[in-house]
Length: 290
Image (tube, rainbow, N blue to C red; front, side):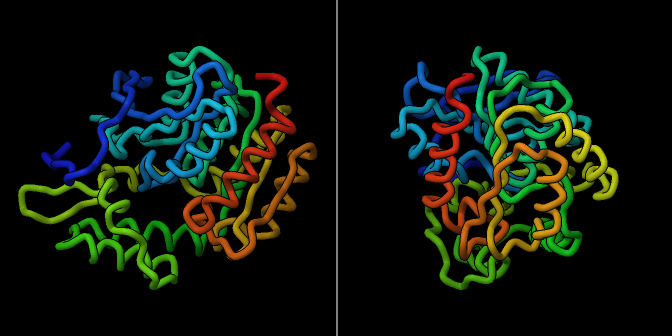
């Protein structure tokens, strides 16, 4: 990893675990450790901080919420061989679950949802339930390409936090910029003085083709027997209505909810609404087997 420093006010991680290949995984936790364990996995290019509001809501509801940075993201270490494939991410998740010592409910957004689906569908992790945040077995290529273009477009960094906020607002189609103080947690300052997203650029190089991944994830969906909830943002350009119907056919016991007004960045677009959906589902479907 190149030498980059955190911005003032960026919180240090509360916990660190060892991943599947000796890599360091950093995370935070909220709530009572004796409560139902809920592990939250962020999307590609994001960090554990994207789950902070949802995690706090879960903690207030009596759950033990844990969010960690995936390998190559946030405060977690970059891996020397550049292996950021789904299997490696699922193996890291298994390491965190073993360290925490109890069966979790998994909540995954985008990449984190794929990690969770692979981990459960291929028997890598024994979980009590699964919530997929705007991710299914297949993805709309145009939406995925838009995400990848956004990530690749800004590898040269930003001069200011405002410039980074403008880039995010442009991607979301919402020019009401969010608080730059929150965004600063996901950026690091390099020796050249510019601000860079804190994820390994090689992450984009190790992504699996969409058709190959869809076949694998479809098999994982068929194998699910635990309570499962698919949550789609109404305006998502990554998960289509057709993909939702296909997923529900693959996994007939799964439930489905659509969040009005939200897009692919579902947990950021309407974080509070998603948090309440998650709490209701876990209480109703997944608490009894934890």
